[in-house]
Image 1 (cartoon, helix red, strand yellow):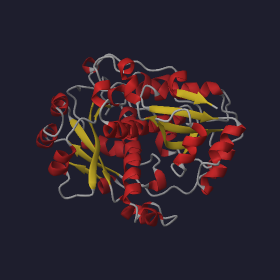
Image 2: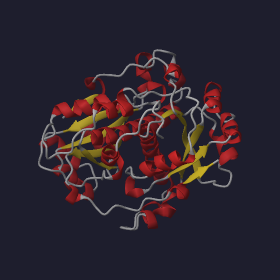
Image 3: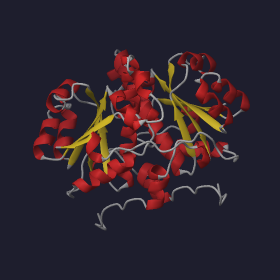
Length: 202
Length: 202
């Protein structure tokens, strides 16, 4: 633990920001989220590992009033106001034909051929790896001082029609609000299980 | 960015550890990974958000020679030696009946009933949310000074037979080696796309 030759853990403030004190937000402070910070989030997200560097996530960031209202019309009743009132919401979509990008994303091997004739393997890999990227997005936003409100209660067909009409091979995975969190908007923290409940050491 | 009333970003050292300089490891230093640090990883992972606090991931940590050898026999040829030589490898599995735990994990609402009669919704939600937890695992390990080698090239049926025989509703999602990384084991970093390649701002 204290071996000076090994990488040192992040300090407690950083662990609090990422994990212990971070919360899913239902409302945000009235502070602007400018375009530059979206680029900074991506600069972190893109570094996270995906299988054969697939990077299947496609992110649609809704900042304008019009885009946020259109997205709010695609989600469940309980989520619509959260999106209307958040400064930014992002659709984390996945490209079911991500393999077409592998010749330049993974130049070490012919990874495109692993997926070209296997639609089911593509769908599974796109889902798994774009979700990992969604996890990196949550951690990246928190690392930069912002907060998120991820949600999966939405009408995928409506999102496809409203936002992905010219990308028929993209499919929405989940969506998230983004901004500087208002802690008064959070619910009571749900229980978190001790190690032995869901972990086994062999 | 410099508004003193807003949470401050993590410092560059922390962002390097989590994202910029973190790498997928194919080999590890000869340093022990004790059980206490596995508990510390879980203490972070469990705080990450999942839909309705489902926490569907079930983690099987392989530390003994026997467990690592058995896991190595379940993976593709290129991955077997990585697992044999890593101090720890973890199977990130998902509970397809996670909804049975929701009465205590999500006491605010009857979330169990949302999933009880919809096996397909359960499978999708277990996959999405256990993968998010896999992303939190990667970030948590890095935050504590360790490194990972996530991989999806394995025989799911073999893992079920070898490790999950008494848990027929658990299914492996992905696996990862874990330890103190040996940077000399890493490959050249694959390309990372600029913002405009996979992002759209509306």
